[in-house]
Every structure is written in structure tokens, then in C-alpha cells.
Amino acid sequence: MATVKKSPALPVPARRQWFRRRLLDWYRKHGRDLPWRHTRDPYRILVSEVMLQQTQVDRVLPKYHEWLDQYPSLEALAAAPEAEAVGTWYPLGYNIRPRRLHAIARESMARHGGELPGDEDTLRSFKGIGAYTAGAVMSFAFGKRTAILDTNVARVLFRVFIARDEPKSHAMVKRLWEFSRALLPRKHVFDFNQALMDFGATVCTARAPRCATCAMRRGCASYPHAPKARKRTAR
Image 1 (cartoon, one colour):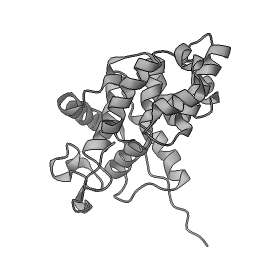
Image 2 (cartoon, helix red, strand yellow; image 1 turned 30 degrees about the vertical axis):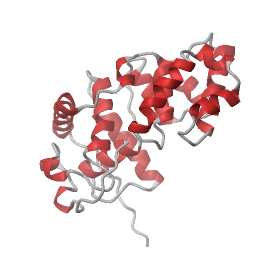
Image 3 (cartoon, one colour; image 1 turned 45 degrees about the vertical axis):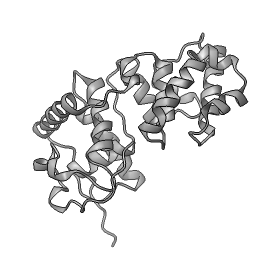
């Protein structure tokens, strides 16, 4: 008879509080100063999130400014030819991304009065906006208490609360969404979600986690088995 693996238990309240406090303290000292953290414009937040998909921050920064100079609003992007938008996107690659942004802009103009909606169902009705991007827009632009889970966040939550191996299965990713929701604080949600992403990008990295100086090491499930340092990459 096959053995059924138990789903990892959600952290108890005291452990959730410990994690929130440590993460927010770390973020106040080490959080990156990024331009999309100084705006609540849903369009600008969306542009940053789409650009950051599979692309490192250092490559995104100059293109983010250039894009917004060229297309400062959904209306400006919708009015531009798609081919022009794709050309402006160069050399970020994955050219389905500017095409989807362009389609979102046109649909927003046609169906939503030129505004990006703030509810999950409508956001996810746009092709190219999945659970993570919708959560990021709702949290960072609309100030909603919404969880996020990208590759960096999943890695942090898995390593700190479960084990050292990387989360891979669909069931595990679904469970990590539950972890992310359970860990959300009542206040400072914007900072907490930004901190999760920064922590995964700069400390709890995929290839060379900085375990020796990590703020979570004393309560981390994978710390005693941390991999040896190798070349480090960050989002």
C-alpha cells in the first residue's frame, strides 16, 4: 500500500510572529531602494512585475525608466503599435511579455475606462496575469492584504519552514501559497511582501545562500544542512 505524505503543517502563531519580526527588521536595514517601491500606480507596478519575470533587477532598471518615458500610462501604451512596444522592450527578451502588456493596456482602455482593476478575478482575466502578478498588483498598488508567491518567496518559505530541498510539486506550491497567506501580518503588508522577495533575491538565494549571516538561521529548518557557497545570483 502506497504511503501518503502528510502536507507540511502551517507554522504556529508564535513562529509566524518570529518570522514576521525578523524579516521586517532585516528589510528596514537591508531592503533595496527600487523605483517601483516609490509608486502606487497600478500600471507602473504591473510594468515592473512583468519586466522582473525571469529577469534580474540590474537589467530591468534602465529599461523600466525607458519604457515609462515612452509609455507613461495605459492609454499611451494602448495607442502605440504593438511592434513599437516590442522594439522598446529590447533587449529584455521573452517578447511575449511586451505583447501581453500591450494587450492588457488595450483591454483596459476598452473595458475598464483606462484603469487597471484592483480585484483578483478581473486582474486574472487578463492573459498574462497569474496568481503572483495579481497578488503583487493588489498588494503594492492597491494596499490590499494579499499574499504573493514567486520563485524567491517559495524558496524562502520552503527552506525556513520545511526543508532544504527545492519545492517542485504542484501540491507543494499550493501548500506554500497557504504558508504565504498564513504569514501575512495585519499591518505593513507592503513591506512584508517586498521583504520576502528581497530576502530570496539577496540572502536565501538559489545557488549560494548567505546562511552564515542570515537573520533566520537560528529558526531555519534547512540551516544545519545548508549547501556550500557557490556563485550567487539575484533577481
